[in-house]
Amino acid sequence: MNKHLLLAALIAMLASCGQDSGSKGAAASAGSDAEIKMIDLVTTQDGSPLKIDAKLFDTPAAKEFIATGKNPYIGVEAEIQAGKKKFNLYSCVACHGGHGEGAVAPGLQGPNFKYAKNATNKGMFETIWHGTNGGMGAKGFGLMQADPPDGLKPDEVLKVIAWIRSNSTITGNE
Image 1 (cartoon, rainbow, N blue to C red):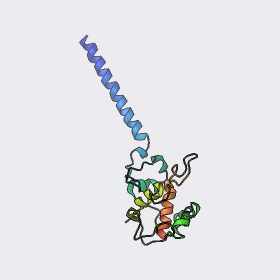
Image 2: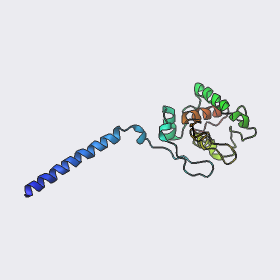
Image 3: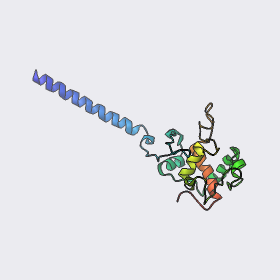
Image 4: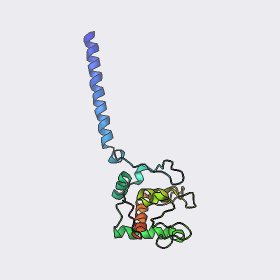
């Protein structure tokens, strides 16, 4: 009888070892998104955590940004022009001026920012995505309009930021 208990215990241990290695393999093959360390984003309004679905960071540039806080589109002319189109399309120009110099709303070129965090690309991303207490609404996808979802995706926000930085001596990646 002891042999049967020992055999049953051994079989159970082997079976559980196989399950553990299988689940580890599944987790590892589930995709690199789960393994990417994401920077902490916070709202401009009150500094509370800003939760954005990791699946929205679906381009190499967006993935690099969420891992490092650096905008890889800074200085890339084609992406700067795409950002300018979005800046105009979303009527940012109406409040921030034709080059982000400021009009009714604050200037975006720096070095003095209404929100000091906007000197970094991470900070400017947070401000554009979730809006401000000063009157600018959220421009992030699903926040600007929920049904149907509309707004800028992370990659588009990075292009807008690249365009804003092209009009400034600040890159935001310092």
